[in-house]
Image (cartoon, one colour):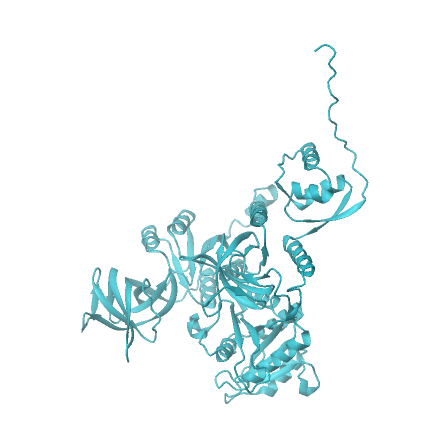
Length: 615
């Protein structure tokens, strides 16, 4: 047009502004939030990103390195903190600004029971809780972290009415990582040592973990009622390790206890509370909750379920939260005895439902007010985790090719691992990784939680892998497919038996093993309680047959709850030697009564056969 002068083009300076201030940014900060912290318009940040070759929207998240680079260009130095640290900072500021609920109050101590396998840790906790946890664990050893809140009910005790939270961590050497997680959440470690056995390798490991976590140690010398008990020898061995008893002039509290006879249990709890009082443990119930994931599992009926230890603040039903790269909303929560709770104060272990995915045990748990922000952070972290996994995948290079040529004689054993909870998957994955040697390399193709599925069997068939199931069973169709495809499924419930079998397989020294032959399964339709007899399960045989002399496995959501023998088998009122598919019958299981409608009773017979080494 005649006489029209176009406006000057917008030019973006390539010269960074001088550094004049410091700002704090969180991981996964959005373009909008970064602009607000810098005090500039969001479109200026977007324009600068375009020059940098990054096309971003106003709500897009930026990684810490790119956000710091943008901030430096606009004249600000950055300090990068995690989302949890920022949430804690915001919560503290918000709490301090309110008068109500800002007071820090004493909280119950969190105590971790540690020590060597079979030294009586779980039995000691059973005696304190007056329950029987060890009876439900495979082989009598603890293989998951349990968390329990115990109130002192003895009115004669000076600590009457006070509460202690106990974490029961596994004692077997393969659970070092699980134990170290327990130590990080704890205020006090109770080191259980058997008076008839003395200091063992895992006892020393437990001491190292406690020292690394910088928490006080109380030594419980257990099994003092046994004939060969020598408590003084234990004291000397531990004194040599730096734990000098108080009566010898040291600072470590020693308590002689007997878990079976319930001797000195009140004294032990009083010592725990006295040690806790010296630490002045406090929390602020009025603030938003934060804590730690102790365990996570996939439940068929309830979805992902997390065991959370609330460390500060009060967790309420309906709260939104972020935990690792997962977000969610507390739809329901339960205490260690299965009772539904509306709120959980500090130092309370709870099982929560409402997770959008499965978190890693050990992840930080933090309640947030903004659900959208929670989702953005979890998506950002999920993307980062996927990128890290892809970066780890092996790419062929010349150096790698030379290495492959060197190891051409090496055999590779592919493994697919399924377990009932996240902690076991982590531990077993580590264990299998460490078992590789110069002749055989173990390669973990897939690991996950829940029953063995058809997808697992198909992957094993395609990649010539074996499937290891830890405390889980294959689905019916998956078992049929495995038989058809000749896929080897090894089922275990005790970790060191699994470890020994893999080791023997790798050295070609597999001894004759006990083989299970599947007989049939029955679905529990209803249960009946008969005095002097126990619980009878009214069942329909859905597959195969059930015999009176069968060994049985009780499955709940494809997870093994109990393993035992048939106590009685009846058709109507008559004893039956066997019941075949399609028929209804009554089954009682020896020494077990916790059967529920919907459970599955799987019958099998065991026989001794010569096993082949894995080729």
